[in-house]
Image (cartoon, rainbow over all chains, first blue to last red; front, side):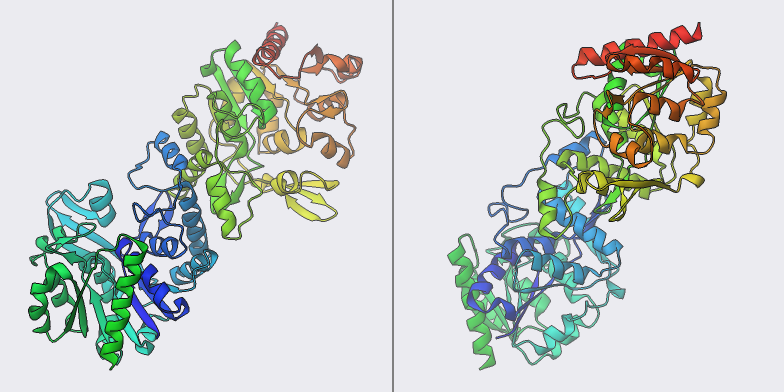
Length: 312
Length: 312
């Protein structure tokens, strides 16, 4: 079964790690968000691409879900001496990835070519594609001004009320080579449990991606990132509220209903199943909180079984 | 006494550290070699500028004479995963300097402005100027081809026989702002015990530097980097041989004789004093090997005393 997964960072990576145990990783194409990418200290940083790569390579710092296990932060501390902002945690080993990426981009490589080079260097068999090679930047409108998403999330710890989201550059962003083809040829599509606004939104907004998802014969399911009225990780709940949505699995299902065939909610949200089905979607409940390796594999099995059921 | 010092890296830094104890560091202007600069992993690296800064800040790894004390090399090791050449040792904390420099240069700062920013961040009172803001690259011609000096020295460990030296870009290199002025206004000039070909050569070759040294009223002395027919550090001896010079303090004195007033040889080379004097130079002997802090201060005192004697 050839799968395409739309993915943000930490939550997505957990499910992707499970999926790589359930299907042949070589049959998995991951389309990753690049809206959180940021340039710091002259380096091009792609947090979601790297979190996915490090997780699938078994190298991620598991407790926090990002960065490399056993990492040190000596360079970052030393940057502080030069008066530089050091709120974005860049580990010493992780810096090598950003140095390598930045130099290849300067030489004219595309982000997709770099992402492929990096995942191969880590021995990751799944294909990891950025949604687009063009620059898309997620900005958060707050009362204090418009912030880069990383400034809002990491520097300011998501404290400002969200008034709006701007995906700068999205209108002109073209899909990276292979993205539309992978979706069109897939046997199934899964939207990972990521922030629908800031992680999946910048993928869906890339030209022709949403239409291709609507048109493909392959079934598409999403796993809810919202459980019992709160996001497991990150500011999904605050963003949904700020943009006028309710904070529920159902609200997420509505955002994807035009191209989805099925939706996987947490068991705690079983009461929302009828409302999800009323959107025209098949619904499954499962344990969507993935703490252990086994829980990741179990949820991946539910995803694959749901797609197989939808294929009939 | 306002001093100007022409300096390479490790040997020069030892004398400079001594000089900062003997005169007011604010009266010292260091004109540093940039011919060894190299771009690696997209970073602009200025080994001599950094060695001088780290040494005067008391932060250098003393045993080896370059890099930062207590340094780690995690980023460099991680760069190896990506198939990158990692023969040039870049420590994690040291990387912060290169990242900072590279980004400032990309923003349009000159190398001199960056060097000044960095030495101030380290609390170094002496002024540290690159000889030029223009790119000069020292290349070594060997039987195996032409190598960047760092490839010859660090990667290949100075194993190839030297057939010639090319200072690429030197003809068009203009002195950094302040270099000629500092020499013209100095009360004394000292040429540090550095490689005359590859460290001092790229300073003297910058437009108008040598003429200004010849014309200035201030006395100029050099400290020999060659002791008893060998260089204390680095490939000075191999380079002198390769370029047809003898390996002796006298040979170094000859290279500078047109602008020098005095020359300081090691006590071991006292037999060369008459020949140095025959070049029209005053000669002093001293212990030029600087292992301890005290030895650095002692040699600095000899330099200052020699300049005072020459001023009369």
